[in-house]
Amino acid sequence: MALPRCGRRQAYYPAPARDDGRARYLVPANERPEARVSPDRCDLPRRVHAQRDGCGYYGDSGQGRRAAIAGVYTERGMILRASVSLCENWTPRYAPGVGFPQSVASGDPTPYGAILWTRVDPAIEQGLTNAEVRALGESLGKATHGTALFQVSLSPRFDRILLAGLAPILREFDNVVRVDTDGRLSPGKTYYYRFLTRDGYVSRTGRFKTLPAPDSLSPIRIGQVTCSDYTNGYFHAYRFLADDSLDFVVHLGDYIYEAVGDPRYQAPPADRRITLPSGRLQASTLEDYRTLYRTYRSDPDLQRLHERHAMIVIWDDHEFANDSYDAVAPEERAEPDPARRLAANQAWFEYIPARVNFDPAKPFDQSIRLYRRFRVGKLLELFATDERLYRSAFPCGSGVLQRHLSKGCPALQDEKRTMLGEAQREWLLQGLSTSDALWKVWANQVQFAPLKLFGRFYSLDQWDGYPVERERILQTIHQQGVRNLVLLTGDLHAFEVNLLKRDFEHDSDERAIGVELMVGAVSASSRLELIERFLKASPAARALVYAMAREAMPDLSESESLSARLTEQILKENGRWMRRFDGWANGYATAEFTPTHMVWTAYSTGHPRQRRAKRQLLWRVRLRLNDPTVELLN
Ligand SMILES: [Fe+2]
Image (cartoon, rainbow, N blue to C red):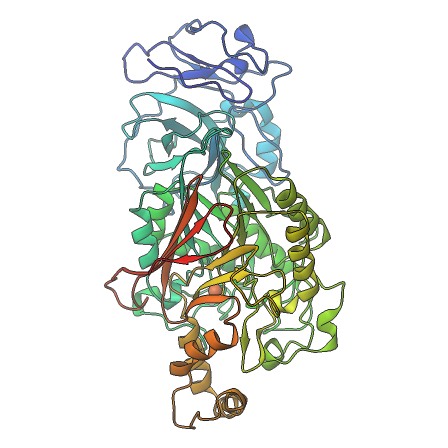
């Protein structure tokens, strides 16, 4: 039997086969008091003594061990040790998936593991309260209820279990299970995982790939998605992506929409309606947000995507409220609502398999830290940012036409305005400046390059609303010589290819210090469809926008469809940096990185409210390493 290579801090040993031959376990050596190893030694004895009954086991509370077998993040962010005899009877007795209505998910892969996630239906197993989890501490294996067994294998048949352990089902976190296997697995491998309960319920099987070894230059293929609105249609993009060959998926936010049938941008098909417990149109309580995540995660295409690929997820505005900043939902009320923001944070933490902690006892902006980085061999480093929790208010007012199609105002240039907040900005700039990976990839929620329309800012919700901070970032990238920078962006419900310019207004050639690749929405209404709806809904707004439009397009007639001419106009006004724009398509993108080039491929997947999906190639774009130009391959 081939041994997995050593993990970062521990060796693994094969335990003997069970008497019945059904399973073998590899026991992490540093979990075993009688086979303690030094953290960096992997050449110790290859076989451990069987327990009396021939079973492998985990845990026991040896002193000085560095990591836990079952790393479980609780509300305090602590890691628990699981101590369990695997000789107990954990045999599947029901069809896979029964009792796990949201199936399984994995996220935040490292070379040595990933977060594994599931939710157990409370009707089959009520989880432990936080107090019970804390009281059990390292004696988790003695719990007679409220825990789930996770198993990890190289085979979907689980005929050899590489890693297993008990994790608490977290009753106060909507009965979810979160396990961090980082440090327990080997780089560049495909693993299968599942969860079981004591009564014999078993989840469906999930699959994920660990990231390559730190010195690897192996090519990497990433899926890119954003803006999946359940109440506006079907998740075709997720279905295609699930079947694609990928290392992981990056979700750039708007994973859920807080609204359920807002007529301005949602048109729910009969089988996609959601009623919130509060009865409101927008989620406002923890139960509301949980209802959204539970429902979204009942979608078969999203389930399949999570079952087949690890995901790295950041949020955008709709995980809380449209165009939100700090704890403010500007379309609903001007005052901050910290309790609602905290509820939105908690539901995100509960359902997203991310290596983050959440503490409900802390103020909303300190309760969670989303921004994080991923080293993918020597090939690339991915920086994932949070562009909502720390951002300043809208500079010129919060009305629709003060946020959109604004000419700007003096406050826009206020040096204190920030989207990232000081700590995150310094973290990002330091990380970009010092990373020695070939490619620097920034998972960035909202459009970084300017977007002008009729001589105005299309939206001050984007980086256009934070020009001083954007300038500071561009200056650092330029001064520090950061090369091969790729921004993967979401939010706008449009596909775009933008050159990043040291000076967007004045650099008119093809020189760029990076590129921004924006993916369209999975199922939210496309940008041009949204504009059409907005103009139809309000004759007053239509008159105002047509008056603005005629300043830039004097030949526009009152009866003409504005949206039909906007693509041409947007490309004209933003042409110094914009190389492609498509405001109609829904879909997804893939980004393939190699040591010599990267290829970004955008696909449209048809209208989200049509049942049948049709995938079509939109664009292919190639960037060569150390060459700041963009090749448009079609
Ligand atoms: Fe969106």
